[in-house]
Image (cartoon, rainbow, N blue to C red; front, side, top):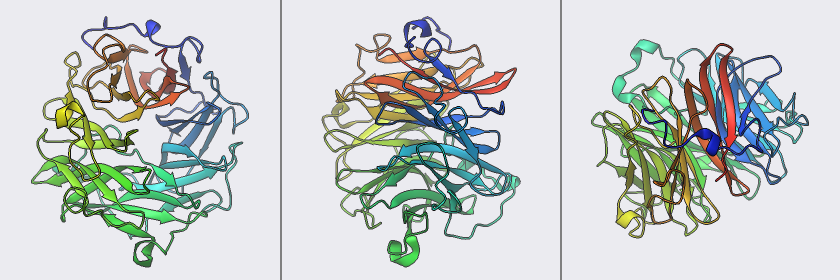
Length: 429
């Protein structure tokens, strides 16, 4: 960033975590790759969805940031969802029985549209062989058309640095709800909401005996990128709709049976058409009061962070920023920043994370907001944000979680002489 003096990382990071606040993830085979979603286990360990080369990986750290040698090989497990070009981890969750579910993306060939890949591990990092094909599965119930790179149309592309981010939810009966996207062409895309049995097979009691339902707004190109199960059993879905050449941020609400909730927005969808030309909702958090918080970005010439808070009918919440979205520019960053992930702390404050764009030495921004949407000026630089500068190259923090009321984050730093360096860090605040 142009102004590196906002805060020094040495005053931000927790020295009791990793090495001076940072855990640089190491693989036994010296492989390198990207770190994406992070989650906290009940005993405060950290599990990270990642990639190593063209394989997916899961990494588990002890609470103090050291790699957990009781899990896999020195805290890491790598593999493929199926034979093909690439498998990568996107998000990870700990199930009620202690098993670890990795949600990721699978590409059959180079430039192929991504499909949902899942892998299930026990607490030691062994594949649960009763799930899918010996612990892994690719879930895509519709036959895909083969595409070539020249067919890509710019208006149909996401500007997101995390368009492969995904989520799966364990249901009370142990079944799983997950999502994917299906492309009929590069300008014709729909989301898929899919329910699986415990063994990973499509649950044919869901979605007119197909195991899935489509998520599409008014016959428009629709891409889904986040899924959250609300306390009332409904599912909030975030993503984008392409309409007249513009990417518009979108939040949809579906019932537990896979039916759009007609009383929410317009037939189950709220589409935001008053921001930039390329907008997206990357993450959704259910607030303590039951309202739905959409986390994402707007984009014209630069990225701006975006927060929207909706009630159960899809209307803006009056007590959150006066019923208006919170758009956060980062003028110190040449290309701005996008909020890619977020969480709500026990004191109801909201934290979000994103990397800066357009710079050779990008940094990670963590911002904190009060429950009413105002910046928390007691946090970070006095304006509600921390600037975390780990190295003199690209540092891309993409996921944030709460560990015993401290902020932990994961991401990737590149390029380095030894390749790409995945990381996790913990803040003092």
